[in-house]
Length: 114
Length: 114
Image 1 (cartoon, helix red, strand yellow):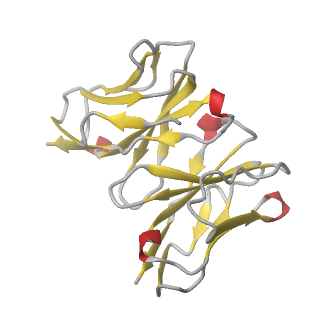
Image 2: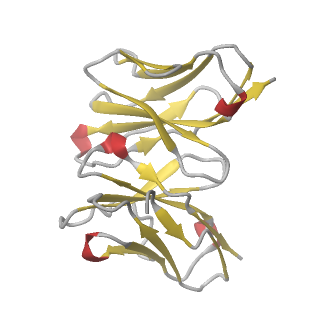
C-alpha cells in the first residue's frame, strides 16, 4: 500500500491477556520503529529495526514487551500479561534506510486494557 | 539522556495570525530536529526538519528556527488557517547516544479561532 498500515485500529483486552499488534511498513522501507503514545503525551520510543541488523530494543519498558520483524517487512509487537498502564496508542513508522526525516507513521493501534 | 520539553501545552490564535510554537532540548550533541503535526485519530505527519549546521529553514508557510546556544527550537506558521489546528511535536536525535530513534516532546495543541 501507499502508507504504513497498522492493525487492529482498536483493541480492548482484559488485564493479564496477551496482545499482538501488527505493522505493515511501506514497501522498500528498511527502517521500522515502534512508539507508544499515552493520552495527552508525546511519543515514547520502544524499538527500532534496520534491515538485518540486530534491533535496538532499548526503549521496551519491560520484558513483557517484545517485537519481531519477519522478512524485513511486517512487524509484530507483542505485549504479554497486559496491565492497565499498557493502555495507549501504539504507533509504527517506517523510513527508507536510515533517513530519519522520512519517517512515515501509521494511524496507530489504540489499546485499552480493562 | 535526551529530554525534550515544550513551553506551552495549548496555543490559541486567530485565523490569519502567525503562530509560534517553541521547544527546548537538553542534549547539546543533538544533530537533527523535526517538527510533526498530529491531527486527531491520525499518526504524526512530517512538517519540516533542520540539521544542526543550520539555524533557519523555510517551507511553505512554515519556518523552523534553531538556536543551538540555548538549545531552543521553534516552529513558525504564517497566516494560520483552521486546517492548522492540531498537536505539534518537536523531535530530536542525539548522535552521541548511537540511537537512530527520535526523542519527542509532549506536544503543543494549536487551536485556530475563526
